[in-house]
Image (cartoon, rainbow, N blue to C red; front, side, top):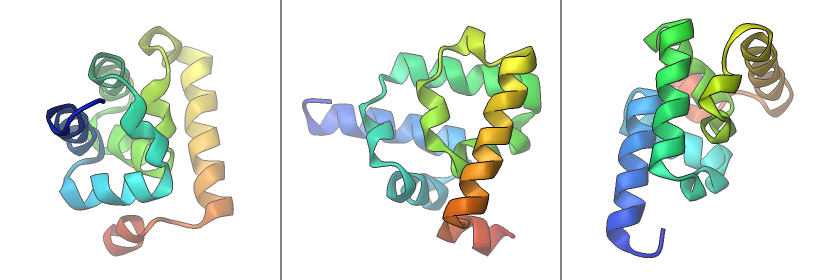
Length: 105
């Protein structure tokens, strides 16, 4: 984003994807690069995750690996989705849970 309004729009998408502002801030601490993902791409990825995993599990996957919001929505189905979830779980295992994950734990 090239202005404050753009940053805020992307942050709102992240809030929706992670389940709240605190979770979104923790996701940014885990992967600041996610703020560079366009709103449209992140919204489509979030919608695909929610459709295929349910809202709570989708938010958990995004909190573990915020970079999933940069994945093309059509790649978040079937075996690709299973791999994405496994990678998020592995990242969380090796990097340790983010603050909000421990608090929700």
